[in-house]
Amino acid sequence: MGRRLRVNMINSLILVAFSIFSQTEMSTREEFFELSSPLDFRPDSNLPTRKYLCRTPGKYIYIILFVILMLLLGIWFLIWSFDTVEKKSRTSTIQPKIDPTSTVSNCNKRVVGYYSRSETSKITSVQVSKLTHAVFAFVYMNSDGTLKFEKQDEEDRFMQLKDIVNMGTSPVKIMISIGGKENSQNFSPVIESEYRRQIFINSILTFLKENDLDGIDLFWEWPCSTYKSVYLHFICELKQQLQTKDKDYILSIVVPPPEVGGWIDGFDMNNIVQIVDFINVFSLDYYGPTQNDFGKITGPTAPMFNGVPGRETFNVDHTSKVLSCETMQSNKFNIAIPFYTTLWENVQGPIDKIEIFRNVNKVHGKIVGQSHMSRMIVQQKGFVLTPYSFDNATRNAFIYNSSTKIYLTFETDQSIVAKIEYVSEHLLGGICIWTVDKDDEGNSQLNAISFDGLCTTGNVPKYDCSYWNGNTLPPTQCNLTMN
Image 1: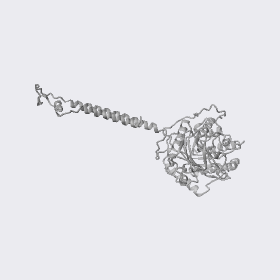
Image 2: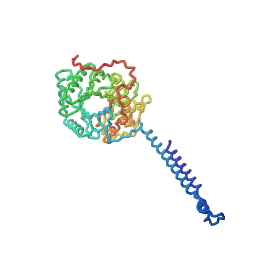
Image 3: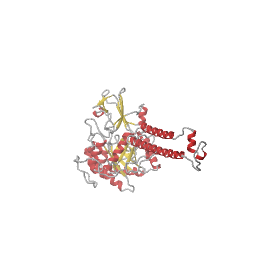
Image 4: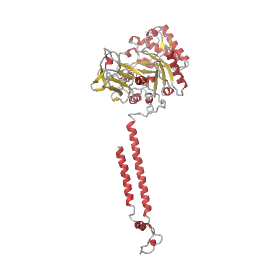
């Protein structure tokens, strides 16, 4: 019901009441006297005297007016209630109610937040209170299997995160991650050697104990297929030794999207999912300004659905479906939410009239752009992320300036809520943030993350897995005999 129509209805009711009241008014003082005075006191009366006769219709008029007034108030209240309900229903699916002071809901959904060793933004207790797991990325692995911080600034940042977690009142787990793009080269020589592998495992156990941490996250980016059994063996051995300790340590790993580059071939997913506590799916960077053919098309970093021709499966939905159907354990997987902004320059027209997907021309033979920009860098470069366009098919935001040919894509409240609802509807384990410290000072993206009212249970994939021809294996028993 429109606002103007509701106002007109109320005005009409008031006019009706006023009309009724006007009809009850007396036109002259004599009429009033006639209605209100006893007959035996009437000066012009020739009628017989009647004591105690007093006609008082005014009393009934007031009663009628009172009833009408109550009816008007009741009708007004119903209209006001309808308006309130209508407003809530109209906005709840578009803009979530965000409370920047609220903590994460106890909904058995994981909110894993990575913190980068290289960022300089302040780590706050407000941020940490919204997480279930805070992960410091990364602690450096040497070629002999020992661990270290490469710089004093990195160690200081780690200690800052640890202190904030320990001082907090929420039950946040603190972990470290090993690997990443800049430190995955030492995985293969370390885990292939029994001697170095044991040094690596002992280094992990010592680091966890000395710093009173809760677990370890392995981020080998990415093992080739020849290391599939070797990596499984290492994960199995590490888990066994973690279980021998007094503390119930957490073991998680990071895996790539199955449809991109064949990177998943180095992971024995059916067996790994039985060993680790959870898996953080790096379901992002489906599009980016890379120096190959993939960088020649703009697109959202983490589209929920859809894709350009040739990349129809490059999205979070397809990634989650493949992993869930292969392992039949949806709740082990956390999908990624990127807190960074991606930029392309020299961007041209849309592809197949889809505005979010556009062609990019090279400059001097190179794609020009920048990935993983923090909101602080975006601000320093003078970019403003509002207003933006929102693509409903991919559930992502973008900005394109036809004059400067600059294109930006990033997450918003609306795209984040879409991912949160997807996790709940498909019984996934939760989300992982890459990275918390790339948000703005007001934590605008982090504040949009909440599973309040979206609690779900179960582990059977909410996908049509009838197409899946893979063989799902029974739980592994951690065979430690190397192939």
